[in-house]
Image 1 (cartoon, helix red, strand yellow):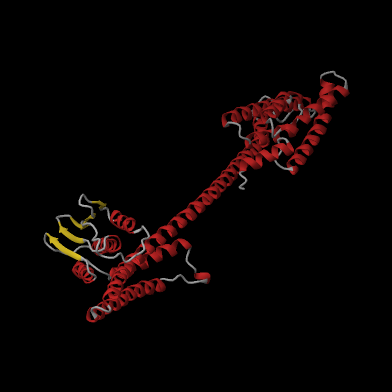
Image 2 (image 1 turned 30 degrees about the vertical axis):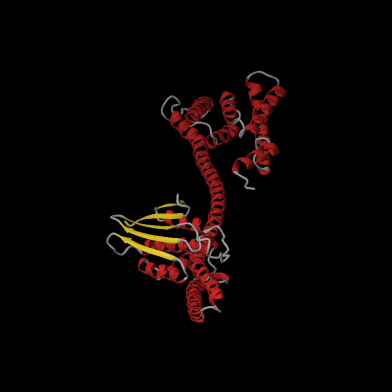
Length: 436
């Protein structure tokens, strides 16, 4: 759990009231004791001038000096008390420390300026009066210095500024530095929380990327293997049926099964080879898990870059004809090349549709249409009802063929439609944009 600056400040307040640390409390208590002793000593002189009992002046000085204990909590009150007792010539230490505490606090600067000016004026007046009294009482014959001239005000102003300016300036510096440190601490806490959120989001994106790439690789493997294996099963069933009746046809079917098996193995080996080349190294140079998914997807796409295109659709239909299906292939429009991903997707759609025909509509008549338009290419595979006289070869179905075709088409911004026809067959249609 991240502890912010506000939590730390709240904990300090609960532990040491308004002090943030133990040494701050010890320092303030020590300063209050020194200030109380100073004011107690000065209270003796104040009692003589005011014709008061000495104990009263001492107790008054102790109470006044003890106010310095609250300099962090109420710095304004400390400065006001020092100004109030300035005519009694008391609490000089409290005035200096109070001005520093006021300047270093979060009190608005205009209030600090007003109180600092009041304290300076009060100390200036007290200093002028005291110096004139001392000069008037000095028994040195004809005075060399006229108390009514410029000497007393100048010296008093210099002494007053020398006492008040340094604590105010130093307090302003310490306050600005403290606020800067608090700002940096809050920024560090905020950055730590943001980094934690970014790490969580990165992990979620990595999991999503792994899942997405698993789906893509599974789709590529399905498209590469399922069609040829399906044709192999169809030819194997035909081979079993004609092995004794027509040995020559059986030999031909066996040769077709061997050719398709070799083609399936070749395509599978090419894809696995590319995946192996993109393997992630182990050890210190290991790539993050999110990169594994991207590398796998790139491998799958790279394996298919040199794969089938629209020119191979005629051969694809011929393979289905050799398996016993009645396939008609129609081309509409002017033939022209397209981007590799467009041609590959169109080929895979037709391939998967023919595979579904072999699985679910054995012996049905099939029409494959390919239309070249201005800014798009469309393909449609429509089959009639299944021929009941043709035995079902029992091909398994994972239910992912139509889903994979839809994902491929939508990824390129195309349109995919599939469903049964009025004649009892099934139709698969897809339109792919051929722009940029």
